[in-house]
Structure formats: structure tokens, C-alpha cells
Image (cartoon, rainbow, N blue to C red; front, side, top):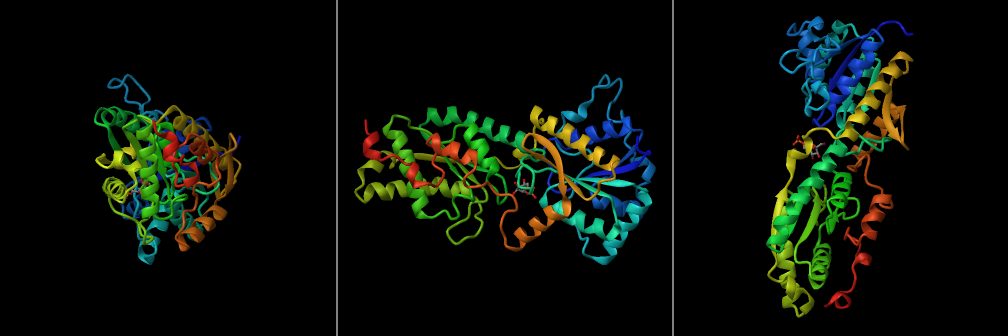
Length: 396
Ligand code: F6P
């Protein structure tokens, strides 16, 4: 049994479902070891506010049952069900400013912590890691993000729930699309990564899934091929279609596009018209196609965490406390090949920095990954002309 410890926990960067489930798991595991857990509000901002006297460190202690409200909720342990973060989160900060940094370091010292667990994504873990080196903190990172793009881990907290959200949105759109013979173009989050669009799209039965790793630029050729896929479906008697586009897919000029779903919806209608007018009769069925755009937006960051995310949260929370008990700091908790492990946080951050310098995603979809192959095998168009059957062979 290790000596009793006082540990801190914070959430940083964009929120996602499952953060509270991690906090709950850490508090439960730590309490069983006789440790104290301090919940730091709004990431490093909370430390500044401790330094400024706005928070008394002792008021930040999260008792094991502090989140049960006897009477009101009959003691129901709600944390595992709630999305968002009970601690609040920030995705901006000014820790490069020496005065701000000094306050953060002072606040941390005043908290009197033996170790800190930071639940963050690539950007926020990078910032906290940098500060931790300056302050000599004993840091453990837990990856969270619906983008699922943190290096070394196959799964991040929040991803599975977001996949479920995309999946159920596609399900809901199917019936209105089918009733009106419409093409629904659905924009999915993920920043520069296509994991969410790919997984949600496959689960939800999308006919087209465009992700940045496979479609570097949304040019006329890609739109023509999307139209080809949609024409093929029409020839086979299916008049509606679901098109998923990841927000990270760039325009022809290589820049991020605003309202990419809206753009695609218009382009599909106009390109199919051009293809038909240029004498390619195969596309004339598509000529008057109705398209509609849906942007799923921040709904993907919310929702009750799925069982899978709660399990991951429990396993990650436990691993983080184990690492602290063993005095193994500077580690990133990861999911790898069906197991929870830990990796060197510094190595993960080096990858993140290198990728950010090169303006590429630190944890992209591998282009030969199982799920890409699955999509292709199902006949989903993912930017690969080889998967498009000839239109004449599908004519009825
Ligand atoms: O990184 C998570 C994420 O939801 C991305 O998928 C998205 O691009 C971004 O954050 C949105 O950020 P914000 O909430 O600041 O608009």
C-alpha cells in the first residue's frame, strides 16, 4: 500500500461525453486507497484563481460521495451518466505570458498536490505538459476527444458516444430522405481527423463518406465521382442517399471550408446537372435531385456517455491512479490492442508538436485501416474511383 496522497484532477480543451465518468472513477479508486482528490475548476485557470485567493484548496476536495445528493436523487451516482464536465473546461489560455505562468505555478503549489491527472486532447495536453515541466509536476494524461486523434491510443474518451450520435442522426435522416427522394449531406466534426465521420458513417449506413485522409481536396473530380455513386444508386432504384463529409476535408485550394455540407449539397445538384447537360445521360436521373445539408455541430460533444465510453473511463481512471501509486509519472494512459497501458507522455507530445508544426493531424485515420477497407468492401464511396461500378452495368 502506497502512502496516502493528495492528487488533483482537471479537464482541459473541448468537452466531450465521459469526462465526469473519468472523474468519478478516479475519485472512487483514489478514495479506496485513502487518497484525497481535488477537482480543479476550469483547468489551469483554476490554479490561477487559487493563487489569486478566489478558491480555498480545501473547498476543492471531491469526497467520494460528494456527487451523490441524498434525498434529492436518492443517492444516485449521476456522474457516470452526465456529459460535459463538472469541473468546467477551457480551450484557451495564456500560459506563455510569464505573469500568467507564475500564477499557475503558484496556485499549483498552494494546492499541495502529489500528482495531477489532466484529462485533455492533443492541444490541451501539450500545454499542460509544458507547464508541468516548468513546475516539476507529477503529471498523468488521460486522452479525451471526439476526434480520436491523440497519438498512441486507439480510443479516446468521448469518441464512442460521438460515433453513436452520428449514427443515430443518420438513422433519423434516413426516413425523411427516403420520403422525399433526397440526398442528405451531413457534416461531421473531427477537426483534421476523419475517425468520427468514418465510424459514424459506416455505422449509420452512409453511401458516401469523405474524410481528409482519403480526400485531400474537394475538387470537381471528387464531386463528379460522388454524383456517379448517387447515379448508380438511383439506377438500382434507391432514390435517396446519405453523404457524410468530415469538417476537416479541405477545399481545392487546400484551405478549410466553412459550411462544407452546404457547399457539397449545392455542388452535387449543379455538377449532376452539368454532367447531364454535357450529354452523359446516366446523370440525368440525378439532374433534378434535391439535396439538403445538415451540420451536426456540438450535439456530437454531448449526450449520455455510451457504455463503452463509461467502461473506458473506468479503466482509464483506474490506470491513472495505479500509475500514481507506482510513482510512474509523465505517462499517457492509452487503449491498445484490447488493453489499458501507458506511454511516455513526452513522446506523445513530441509527435503532437511535430504534426502541428507541419500542419498535419497527429492521429489520422490510417488509409489502409480495417474500417477504411470495410467501407470500401461495403461499396461506400470514400474517394476511391475503383469502388465505383460502371453505371451501365447497374442500369435496370
Ligand atoms: O476537438 C473537438 C472539436 O469538437 C472538433 O471536432 C471541432 O472542430 C472543435 O472541437 C470545435 O471547437 P469549438 O467547441 O471551440 O467550436
